[in-house]
Length: 439
Image 1 (spheres, one colour):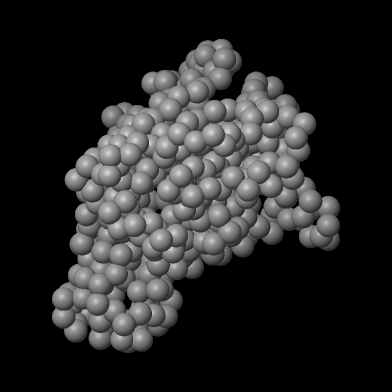
Image 2 (cartoon, rainbow, N blue to C red):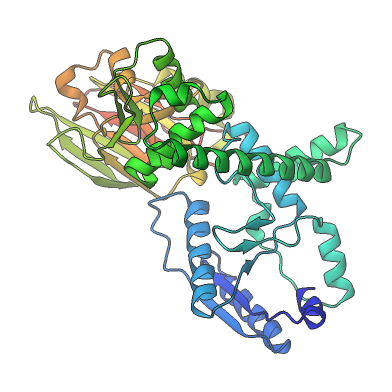
């Protein structure tokens, strides 16, 4: 459709395709795209990712690689914008996913029609998937279906194929257009509020607690976050609404001296007026160990008292045991940090490679059924001895804490009734006779 419009508007177009290399048919699809673009006599640019290492979330990795490639082409070939084919359904899904994850308010709230910072345009947000397919068929435009878009192992696909159809069936309104309009309105509001926060911070420099207290509630936490980003860098972009509201509450109550905010960031109250953030991503312990863990492998290490520990990773079939039995085993085998324990996760929603390290200073963990908690506080609640806290292994999925043996498990990748494979993580501090069940 853009090809047709460009002939009327005198717009120079090019086409780019990025091959993530994640499916057997990816190379054939890249060839099909190239053939069609060449038939239109358009400049064509293609790229392919190196193999996925498994060290981070798959979808986040793919998105980062894709947009980096597109921006590289835009810059090198001197195009003004990158245009993507996101449609109304994509925007509706993103809004719902943000709502249920608690990440409603952020600088990049949702899929916006225009993103000047990243030089992105999404001209098809007002159009539904069905309209796009109808147009493609009427104009004999070939297209392929990505089989992974139908896999219910991915959270977005569950929203696309289960939740939105359910809402559509149970309500009298047309859900996708309604969500699209709500998304546009919220995005405009968010953009305006973050712009106000930037201007307030610039005008008040340096920002002080007294100046901050005079601001409207909607701006206070946003200004605080922008101040953190300015002082410690992009790491502060990870600070969420609840964390920053906690800072404001503690200050209002007169309890604020210094506070660990997670992600290695600390707020230091050096004076009554100065707002000062510091970032330290160094490991809390000087006894640094960093080991990778894959299914079928184990990692061993030594505690300060000379005892050894081991974590094993095994992938099991979900099988006929059933969802309820797995959940019961999870609770029964949670274990204790001083001896042994186990935790079960949906193997198909985790990176293939996990990381085991000590804790990091000031980090947070999103605990299953409990929300965001300080790792230090969790260890205190479980009475982990002080001299053991810096050597107790922490299992990570990318940058997220997945499991602290015998202390807490995260909300990441829980078992579901539709799960197919189970990642079983077993922790043992010393050899004992009690065996953990296998299928």
